[in-house]
Image (cartoon, rainbow, N blue to C red; front, top):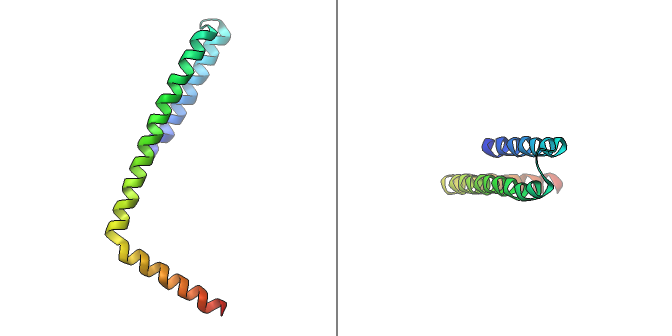
Length: 85
């Protein structure tokens, strides 16, 4: 998850640098239009990797603690039903 936060910060830093270079006239609009999709693709790769890691972590937790999770939910539901009734 921290890689995603760092990648997002890096994306915005690179985007700001690109904008500053464009404002100074060092980079043409065509180059900006070509570079922005590349930066977005880099960020989307990091996002997909973070989502895959999170899914893997949750599935591992579910496999290892399935009975405890279901039991806790059942107790919670029964407690709420008892308090409402």
